[in-house]
Length: 397
Ligand SMILES: Cc1cc2nc3c(=O)[nH]c(=O)nc-3n(C[C@H](O)[C@H](O)[C@H](O)COP(=O)(O)O)c2cc1C
Image (cartoon, rainbow, N blue to C red; front, side, top):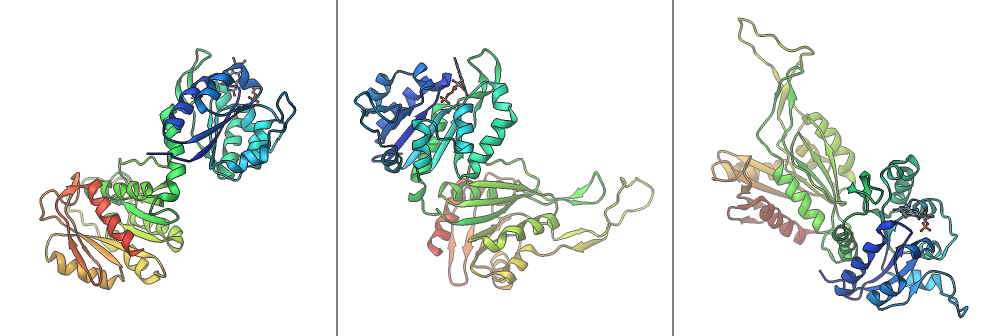
């Protein structure tokens, strides 16, 4: 991805990982960014300003004025930037960020800025674990800054633990994500996506569940996040994971829990895609002790769960509401019926009669219906299906 014309300030503080900034600067310049660098006094012990000014093709700043006593205008510099990267960020500089301590040139630039800030801390493992550092990272996050957490590995002290500066590729991707965010089609949109099965407890060790893997919902969440949406992903029991700053995962177990979680966020959602396979029924009584085997047949009475999708349809205001239908017979008729009955804007049908579609496959074959249109898609990977679904939804927003 190109960073052509993007303006970046790199603030380097006095950590041993400072030397790695030479590589970041080289990569940023190669991808078209203009980079201006500010060093703290301590950082001067760890990197050579001449190397950095050569790589960045710009002057390197360390203080409010140069030898000739001309002012390095920190305000102008801060307002010039599209993004500020604090890397490596020492415990000391992090504490100053969290507390607004403006006692050097880097802090004056930081505090005058209005652009997004990315902080990549690096320090020894015990320092990193210190409650003050944890708290300061939380405070920095509450200012809206992005943290690229330190990684686990061998540290300059010879100890092994979390504290290493994140890999330069990881930091570079964080910069790219930020700077290209506004160019993404779903930036500013809030998505609510459900995924996976629900488990309805019979007793403390048994449940009624289904074969949903959660993959379709997670792939939808990842694709929406890639396109810039902020995603609340509510998942039933699933081994799927999603690692994106745009995705917040809430894990639940039962249909009732999913219902409660969905309605915490639904009101404030632009697009809701309900891909979870929610149990329609739940045992009327959930035994508190394990049910013992005996000579009799065992009958479990089931009662209806609340219908999440129908309730969402009833409460719908401006949300674009999407449901899934997994059918085994009268597929299209049932899907279209559900679209109308539940007041949906779109329904995605996958038929278990289609080979490779539905549960526990990495592929899916879908047909989309809106009240006025329908569109068929071929058998594809669930990642590709997620793209098709989001392309379709995107046109409707
Ligand atoms: C060899 C050496 C390595 C250091 N490495 C780190 C480090 O990785 N992270 C850190 O937070 N502090 C580190 N320090 C301590 C900082 O340099 C010190 O706290 C300094 O005051 C930071 O100032 P600054 O935040 O203004 O750059 C190191 C100090 C020395 C002497």
